[in-house]
Length: 415
Ligand SMILES: O=C(O)[C@@](O)(COP(=O)(O)O)[C@H](O)[C@H](O)COP(=O)(O)O
Ligand SMILES: [Mg+2]
Image (cartoon, helix red, strand yellow):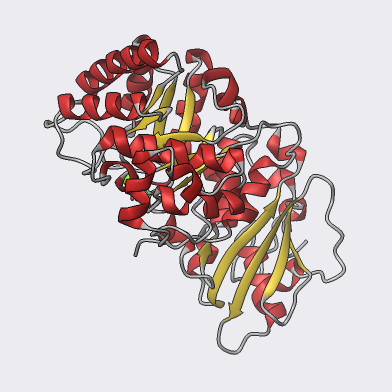
């Protein structure tokens, strides 16, 4: 039975329950109709190629089907579960976001969304904790959890890093967080940073009576990442951070498998995501990267500030809704809103994201005129004002730190 490009287009196709259904937005290449381009997408991302084939065995049960082809450029492609290796995210992405991203048959192609069947999701662990971290590890039952990255991003000594953590924790922050490019450099070596910062955490916990913790960036070569995660757990840490896009999904899966036994939650930083999702007509959407992250098992994921911060964001609200939605019983993921946040815009951000999030502020705390502890107090006051339903200006009457922050940054979004 031959297979050729045209065999991968079936406008009347009804997806099977076990199919992975992907939504693509394409611009057909020169001389091709939408249907012809769609057929090529389904073919090249499953088991076809440019030449008509006549294999002995019938391999069509592994072939994808393009359907719902619309002239506005959207097309849906249904992939049989049998095409995929259960539990291997790299293999799945090599299909649905592989060679097709570079085909001449399309001028541009964007993988916009996926509907994941249980036949595939059951191969993945999903998050170990999800939003349970806010109550089981932290004590942020009725407010957003607060996190801060010491700034400048890198260059501080271990002592300076740990001291900033202490000041932020006693000021009301829940989580110290390493920056995405701080790993194990000479000026702030990994192991010393972990031990000294966790000692400061313990001090801050006993002084404030609040649970505190540290999002330790373990990003490195995979085996080294596992060793670093074990080091964090051995020293009483409950969180590791991974730059999931730059480390790669295979590495994320390896870390997730190990953290299951370590009782350590995974904070996912998405550095490099914009290389995939920034141009709306091409690449892989942040929505799909978020879906992949949840399946691979991260507990927190940066999803943007709904446009209020310093970075371009795509669909923060929609992605957060999906991270909280049911996915065949897998746990949810806590959205992290970060990037140019300061107390003066927190209420607008929370109006968009809801308060079951982690609010991260680096410059918005350490840039406070009175220093880190005051910056932390100002941010804490801002989120408490939101919970109390009072305006920031009213809260500032009883929070000098917040008053100073509003004086400095007002209500403006940074650029
Ligand atoms: O390095 C930074 O820029 C941050 O530490 C924020 O610092 P500030 O709080 O000082 O802005 C985060 O990495 C970004 O928020 C990541 O972007 P996103 O959250 O969109 O993935
Ligand atoms: Mg950063």
